Length: 214
Image (tube, rainbow, N blue to C red; front, top):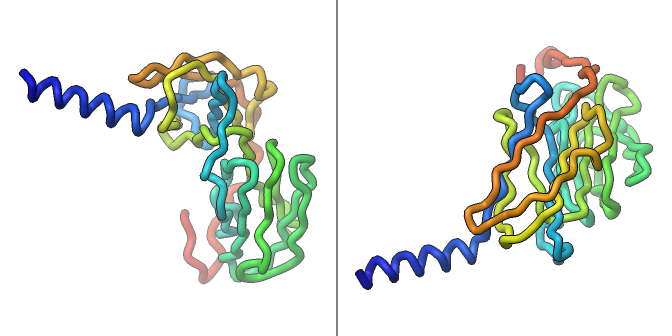
């Protein structure tokens, strides 16, 4: 009996140390799993400092930005290595971050610092079909959905969170997706269904003589 009580106590301590998990499922209006959706949770008590800031990267492969959507916290820097055999000119005119990386091969000498929350649309001044997105979160609690439409946010203290979802094709304002979610010791599993705009991306085949992903 005592051993069982000790095991339960250790399990409770371990859960308290690692925190609860929010398992969000994102689908389109028809119910199909939706990848590349960013789920952000903001605690009712306010946002605490986080160590998630650092260096990330978005590659250019087969005339596409990889990943197509990159979720980071404000204060993170991002490098843009060019893996193609042609040069790219990466830029953004978005309000959250304007930058310009003139025509280059390889890796630019200076990464880009994303200091303000918001959505940053990136493109290539040479290849008009290239488009990607940097979602700069105002909270350390965020995740991007996978091919199954699942976004996992771990390490949460039990409590009430304002949770919202963003996607590049979202037809409504991001704020319209927000809801209050109670995260208990066992976590929470909210689900969203989003109305989407058409996908206008041009999907490309790998360049001749260059390995690709298709």
